[in-house]
Length: 405
Picture 1: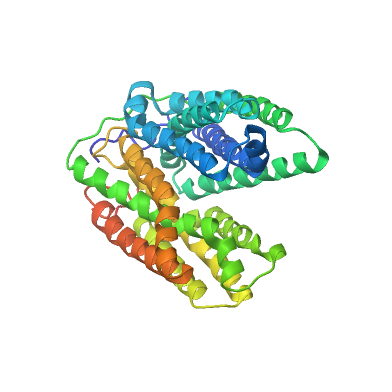
Picture 2: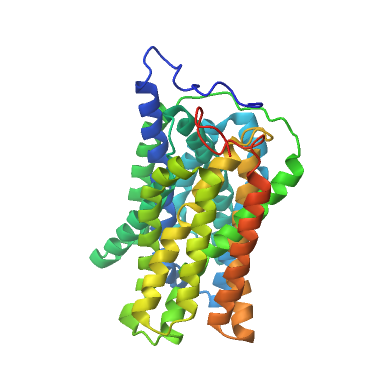
């Protein structure tokens, strides 16, 4: 297949067939887990940060938006940087800088500096994101079976661990500064260890055929997929409060049930990908999510809504890992370029979805907003993935020796 090195790239390292692959698998898994912990480490303590900086909600929202803007800019240039420095270096250096800067969140003295720091963190995180997914694609090809959904499952697990540690720190009275400093130290140790396990490799070259059209498709696929994924996290608690009349002790369970469904789906999803291949798995996941969304919006029962949120998470869990796999192995792109296009889409989707759903909800209702926005996103995602990534001559939809769809 054009644009790809021999499929046993990592197998040829050293004199043994399995040891380098196992080492690389452990290394990239640790990077995913550590990166997820960063996200969960400080957001639960955002009210504390708000009070320390003495900002209102409007200013806080604008400040947080700078983080999204930095990530968007970082995603836009990540393909160029990865092509120059390589996937391993982008993943490792990006992660080291991310953990090195993390404790500054606890000490920045003004809202402007906080927003600037978040923009820098977003930019750096985009480099680590594209780099670790590119490494994951390489390792998956050498393993010979799908591992990308489990890698993303470890990222999700990392966010849960980071959030839990933040909650425990609050419970026992540990300040934000010491908490982030401890996590930063542990993260740097983990990344340093992981870097020793992941082998370096020269960046791939792409064919460049139809890359512009396919890049646009990846942006759309990423944006629509994260609209489906983000809606329960953004609006689940409000839905349970306003629509089903759940009490304050229950409303937070929407995000917990959804995240649990997504974590379970990602840990088991590789077996589905190995049996069905990537594009059919992503399509099935979107359909399951759309069906679950329909259950949610047409019920006013809290238990049924929670069942729907859990199935929603289970369905959408496999979609983004599959998209990263397909974007990272597409031969039309030089290494990292396809992943960069996809992450630009995901960043745009995460930034646009809450405002879009909120706008429609203000004009009608939250049920209508979820049904319309998520339903249209699901339809657009299905069509875009099928048109963009389901070409047997262009995309490696399965692993070497298993054929392509």
